[in-house]
Amino acid sequence: MKTWTTVREWQARRTELKGSIGLVPTMGALHAGHGALVERCRRENDIVVVSIFVNPTQFNNPSDLERYPRTVEQDLKLLASLGTDDVLMPAAGELYPDGYRLRIEGGSAVEGMEGAHRPGHFQGVMTIVLKLLNLVRADRAYFGEKDYQQLQVIREMVRDFFVPTEVIPCETVRAASGLALSSRNTLLSDAGREGAASVYRSLTTAATAEEARRMLDAEGFAVDYVEERWGRRFAAAVLEGVRLIDNVPVGEEK
Ligand code: PAF
Image (cartoon, rainbow, N blue to C red; front, side, top):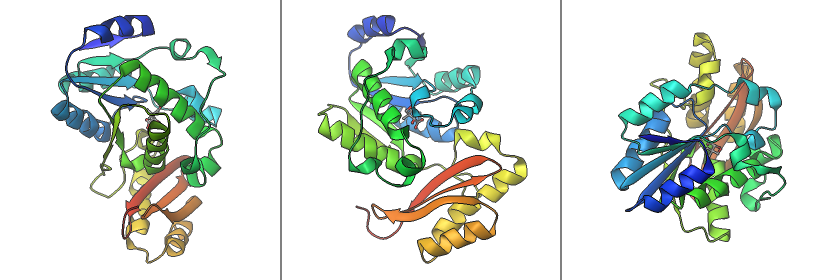
């Protein structure tokens, strides 16, 4: 496995690569959910590229960026064990040589939910993902459905900017309790992690979004939203100062 910290070195390496290329973009602090993306990427491509970059432009809250977990050594071990070929881990100056002046605004998928509660978040996500897609020129790129609105935002961008990479959605990986795996879960206490499973439970057992919201309110979550869109039910709620998001299919997917 090779790691690349400068764009120039990566670009030289990219010219040597032959066969199909799969990309798994990440912000590190890897867990079994990322592992599943890399495993699928390994099965479906000749070359597996993973990026690890904690993208500052998608954090609307500076303290969230500061406390975002960073576990690079552990991440590299996991990626090597999964047969990753190349890891891109450039510094911010490499990916934003002119700061953050050029950016993508986004279409209808950015509206509401995360887009409303995290101003600028999706603009940062789209901008970095487009940079990574252009740098890697992958045949396929893998994204988890836990961030389902992000997946829709990226699909919209890839379609509208004619990016020749296929976006592959991958099912959310969950703990036995139902809690969706997330790098931020490590910021919860043991009791918090147990309690956090209520997000999934409320989404799957309530008859309506309103009822799911009431369940979370009653359990002491600070709820940002529970709503339905794209044939799925979404929730975002804060527990122990950690913002959790999740979604499940309801009825026909759109
Ligand atoms: O889902 C994530 O980890 C990030 O939003 C992504 C897609 C790697 C962009 O920074």
